[in-house]
View (cartoon, rainbow, N blue to C red):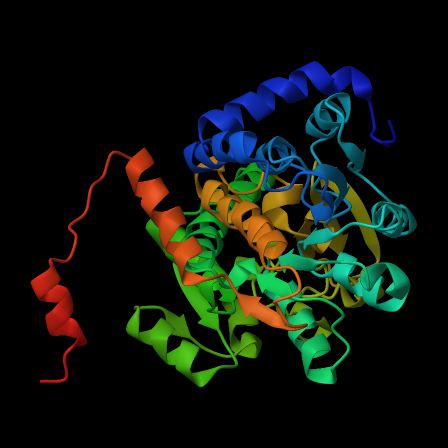
Length: 414
């Protein structure tokens, strides 16, 4: 059995964490039971680059129940829960993940799982897809299809599709309604605030919180921060989203203006250099900087380090930077995903839907091998609706059904 984790003695603790997540993921439990009976993934080798958390472990268990052999690496050098990684390794999963990987170790882990020659690839951020399309093209040719969990990864895959280099079909799980409307908004909204609070223990009420980006992630963060009593300012580059933020009751302004008055800054754009030297020079003493985007490029750490005269780890997950004028700034989680580096990521309940889409998308790829073209597909509506129906059922909620008369009425042009 091949794996590389930090400490196998943590396995028993990890199993308890996975048990806790499984209890709160009823949709995946239903799918796992179904997979266990039908074995839709029998003989399929899956390579997955995901945050190695207790919720991811429940997805992996579901894939294994379906007959798959799973190779797993982390999608962030700092997001792995080492006890969960050990637990999965003890159960026969090929795990190559530990918290605190160097950049070289991170990419070597991805290279290792790709070398297993998977038929299905599951990614979060696009690094596995990118590796297969750049450094392992012969392996990529053998892939039946893949999935992508996050907005950033879908953008990268769309770029590959536009350039005509995509070597296999990909299901954009991020674009499922039962993913982005819940995971991105409610999951990231809550877990981002959770990460900031665990790292700093500050009082949110009364703070001026600046949220960069008003996509689904930004919406969730802005609404949760306001719900805790913060005065929330939104910065945007898209006029439609900016107008929506205004209509939702938020102040909207340029980052240049917000930099002068904000207490807490949270980036959620998926873009590079959202907060830079020009903004740091305007910020108040004690400003807190956090990132909720996939990569550590939104808050320019390079700029921050270039103008600071000293830096130190003042708390777990908090780096203090001191400028020549005496101002102090506090960067959380080294500028990486604050909800996963400083907390535990999304709650199990919301990941239940996201990972149900992943499991069902994997089965869909196997069932439609040779039919799907080499392009990026949205999750089929029937999968999306089934996930929602199962989630409602698990919550004890029933909804109405159209009568034949109502259906005919809606289908008629008269």
